[in-house]
Amino acid sequence: MKTDRAAEGLPERIRPELNVEKWSIWRPANSRGGPRARTFERDVRLPDGTRIVARLKVAPTTEGNLTTEDQRVYYALVRLWEERGRSATLTPFSLRGLARVLKRIWNPQTKASLTRSLLRLRLTGFIWEQAYIDGPSGRRLGLLDTFSILSDLKIVRRDDAGHVTREEGHFRFHAAILQNLLAGHTKPVRFDVVLAFKSEVAQLVYSHIDLVLSDKANYERRTAELFEDLGLEGETYQKPSKRREKLEPALKELQGVELTTGRITKAALEKTRDGADYKLVVRKGESTTTGGGGATGPGAGMTPPPVPAKDAPPSEAEDLVRHFHRVFHGAEGALPTAKALDQAADLIARLGMERARHVIDFAHREAPKTKHRVATFGGVLQYATAALHDFERRATAEATARAQQDQQEQARRATARAQAERDRVQAYWEALPPERRAALDAAALDQADPADRVEYEAAVPSVRRMLRTAFRAALIRRLLGLPAAD
Image (tube, rainbow, N blue to C red; front, top):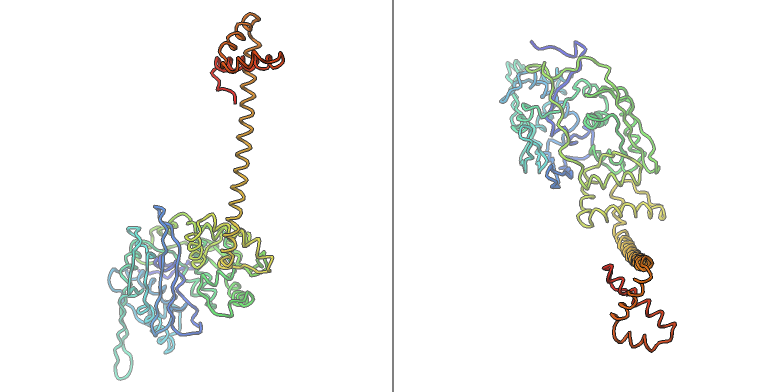
């Protein structure tokens, strides 16, 4: 028998598919503009060290873009699927039943709205390129074309004299999504919390931070990059004040809200250190609810599978973007945007990691001279050419300085070695008794070069003493196995 967790005061948790949860595919329902394809990219390093670009393209139809309303409907379908036996084929449902799950009043407007959402979930195309992970095998699928969240959708209405007497239908998730749902490649979601939001932006921010804070307690993000993460677009959002204006009402809703792994104890905007933007600061504390709980229906008493760990260690592109945040904003553990990762990967491919890091350091030194405020990673790219010249100049100067230091060090070592050899020769001589000294002097003169002996015989006494000392030192060096003196 199905239980009503909301009536029992327990959290209403569902477990939607993890790949869908990882990408910000939903837009506010009141967004301006018609249907428009959106492409998301992320730089990913595989376990074997290979770096790839994971890409997702979302292609809407004339029914419009996927919205926050569609996200709720998708979650409601997941709940119905869980409640009705986690079917591997078709799941029966009705629009009225769907409205009840969503806690919406049944009327013509609700019916029309749910129908539009279901059509968007059925018709919106997804192209996953190295971005969709098959849960059972852990394999990245190369390319999935003509992919939609729902692969089957049917709503049947039977009229009797102009009155609807019966309304029924069925749906089925795409085979790849269904396989991951059955395998537990999912993420827990507080369905009751999502339904309670009045602000669409609050819902988008909540979904984002609930994922990010699944394994950490703190989160900070500049609003320029947060809006890029969430897909909030528009010229007006280029201004920090407008982003703040959009976020502040949403953050009031987020205060104290329950997450799947805790509770939001702080959600606020703070001025960034450079004064060029605001940053969202979120802190997580312990949950105040009880009951935990997984999905209802079959398997409800089982321990929910954990959210899979990240695919791989940080890539060079991630390291470079985080270096940018440390240098420009003093931020540790920043979460790179897909756009920033793409720009960083391109910079590294062209210049190499060392030169790419120098571009950031150079831009940080030079930007204040022109009063240019660099808010995002893309702001440093204009300095790349000048930074490369500066790097080469510095590299040349450092190479010259190292060569001079090497020469000086070699000369110092040669001098020290020569002095040590002279000390050994002198010590050997001083240790000989007088009779051995006379014999060694005679042998040294006898073994000297004939021309040197002629010079010795013709020299004055002072020169003869100097030459005899040289002959003696040469013989002692041979006896000690030392190389000939220069």
